[in-house]
Each structure stands twice: as structure tokens, then as C-alpha cells.
Length: 486
Ligand code: BES
Ligand code: MN
Ligand code: ZN
Image (cartoon, helix red, strand yellow):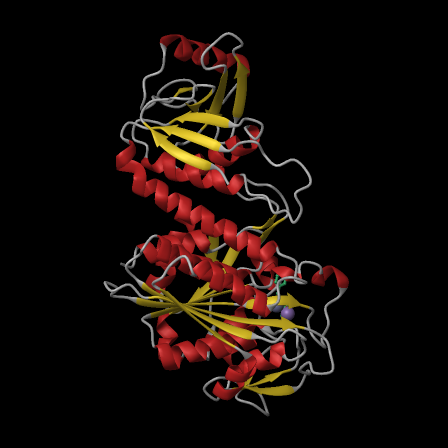
């Protein structure tokens, strides 16, 4: 991964990157004043280049200029648009792509550099992300980036936050991209154990199938029952001494979703290795909270199971007894995510009794039908909590949209044979799933947020800091939000 250093003077003046702002009230597109003074001849040359290169200064525009006899020997003009964090994130990602054949580059930051630094670092680290299971093929040469700022010491914390945020997002992408032949529930739990070992204050408990049975986690056992790789429940606890707020995060961890006996058709199944993206996001956000020593207690639950077709698979029409005793009639084994989440949420509400409960899940295809590819669907009865999370998610460069929990649809959850019907075919797919989950929140009903992130968990194209494949959606937003809770 890229090594990023803060420096007060450029030392390796091979390739210098200069930020360009667009035309505006201050005049035509121009160089942004940088923290470190530039040689007059470099400034003059960059200024002369702007109209020739037809650079508008939009975020992510890149122009590379060779200077055979000069120092620096290459100049990269980088559009930074409005100059806010989002624009710098796009610019950083564009720079990582355009500069992939450089080995070391130096970026001159604007005078007041904190916002730019956060965006630049996240953009560089996320835009340069690649998932490969083989060493074959070209790996980007770009290994080192020096960032020139006025006072490196003053920006150390900003750099650390941006780096941890991006590293944890990359880890979530790795976990989600990993093929399910490798990624069974035990493997995922092992990855959490290995990552958590770096933080001695982080406590991990992994429940195996026997313990899940003894404690009554019937939803996780039903969904995991058809697989040769048994289910697990990961419980990861970051408990700093100075915490005043306790948050429980729950993430759907279906390591592969065939649909079960209600089997999916080929096109719908091909990407179902990503059905643990919620678990990946909450686990890595918790690792991030530990890495940044955020003063908030975070307990993360990841119910892990593989939804398979076999003689031991659960059946449509089965009645499932969840942790705590509520029962669900399940008529479609493809609505498996809510069954494992129900157990984990009931456990959180009854035993952990946190202040706030948030669950993330690749729960329904209906998320994308309603909101398209980039927005998660966010549900809560608590306006303040919903606003706080939406604000954090957007500030982090992710997108979510609030959806309703209509009282009218609650009756659809009725069942003749159980407390609840888990997948009524009335209402709307993502909405009734949220209403179903709410039944397991107990006393936390008004302090709960559900996020259906099926759509933004994956990207079909390269788009700013997103690369093709898993996006790591949720890690950045959760870390922003957790940082406000101290
Ligand atoms: N994992 C899927 C949802 C999904 C679909 C995630 C597409 C990402 C992309 C989930 O388990 C599922 O199959 N949901 C069903 C629910 C239905 C059976 C009530 C769906 O959305 O069709
Ligand atoms: Mn399913
Ligand atoms: Zn699923």
C-alpha cells in the first residue's frame, strides 16, 4: 500500500503535483496558493499551461507535463474543484490512477491543509485499491507520496484518521471480494481474530454452532444448517475506559447466499459472495474505532452463515425460534438475512442493552429498485439519530436516503402459526424487511437504525474513490458517526 508522509519542504522533487481551482468569482482557473512557496519559474510555467491544457480545474482533472531539463522533471496539474473534502477525495483517486506509473510523487497542499489532506489521503488509498488473488499482472508502481504542508506536526492526527479510515475500508473490500470457496463463516471469524490481535484492548468472542444451539440462536442455526461450513456469531467489543455511550453494531454476514431451497436464478446468484458486506463494514469500523482510540464503546455482532441448498437446509414454511423466544414463519428461504439479524438484535437488546443499535445489511434487491446504485436505504423512528447518521455518511463521501416505516404495513407481518411472518409479499421489499427487524429491538425501538446497503456495497465501475467490486460502504460513515459520540 501507498506510504504517505507529511513534509514541510519538498525533498524528492521528481514529480510535483499542483492543485488547480476552477474559474469563479476570483477569476479564471488558477493555481491554488500552496503551503510551501513554489519556485517562480514553476509557478509561471504552470500558469501558462492552464489555458493550453484546457484545464477547467474540476475535481479529478489531471494534466501531466514533462520538463526534460527541469526540476521537477514532471509537473502534474490536478483539478480540485470546490476544494472541499469530497473534491479532494475525487482528486486523490484520480491522482492515484493517473500517477500509477510514477514511483514517488510530491503533492503541494493549499495553505489551510486539513480538509484537503483528509480527502487526498482517502482518495489516494481508496482509488489505488486493487483486489487480486494472484501476483500476475501489473501492480501500480506508485509507492510513496510526500505531502507538503506548512506544519506537518499539526496535521499528524488528520493523516492518521484518514489513513485508518481508508485502511479499514480496504479491509472491508478485501473481505467482501474474497470468493466464498475461501470465505466461509469460520474463515471470516478467523480474519476478525487476526485483525483484532493488533489491538490488545479489543475483546473477541466467537460462538460455534454448539454454543449457538445452547443459547437459542435459532435464526442463525436455521440459515446456516444447510451448509457443510457451520455458522458462527462474532462478538467484538471495543470498550475504552472513558466511554459514555455504548453502541451496538450488527452486520449481516451471509458468506454466500444461494437463496437456499428457494434457490436464486443464475443472474441473481452470481455476486452473492458479497452478502456479508454488512458484517465486513461493522467489523472493520470497530477495528477503526480501536485504531483511533475513539472514546465510545462499540460492541459489534456479526452473525455468519452460508445459505446453501442441501438435505439439512431449512425449508419454506419452517417456523424458527429466535434468541429470546420470538418465532418467525419463513416461507422463502431467500429472505435469510433478516433471520440471522433478528437473533443478533434480540441478543443485543436483551443482554447488551446499549444506548444505540445500528444494523447494516445487504438485505434486499429492492434497495436498488427504489434508490439506484449508490444510495443505501436508512430506516429509523428516531429523527435525530437518523439525521446524525445521514449527516455522517454524506460527510464521509457515502450516500444514504431515509425511508419510511409505515404503520399501515405492520399488519402484513402477521402469521397464523408464528409470532411473525418474516417475508410478507405485500408492502415493499426493503420497507417490510425493516419493519420485521424492528420487532426484535425490544426497548431499543426508538434508538435503532437499520441500513439496507445492498446497492452501494458493490460498484460496477470505477467512480472517484470507488473501484470495481466491493466498495466497503459504511465503514467511512460509521467511523465519522462514532467519532461524534465521544
Ligand atoms: N442477499 C439478498 C439481497 C440482495 C440482492 C443483496 C441483490 C444484494 C443484491 C437477500 O438475501 C435476498 O435474497 N432478498 C430477497 C428478499 C425476498 C425473498 C423477500 C430479495 O431481495 O429478493
Ligand atoms: Mn437471500
Ligand atoms: Zn442474502
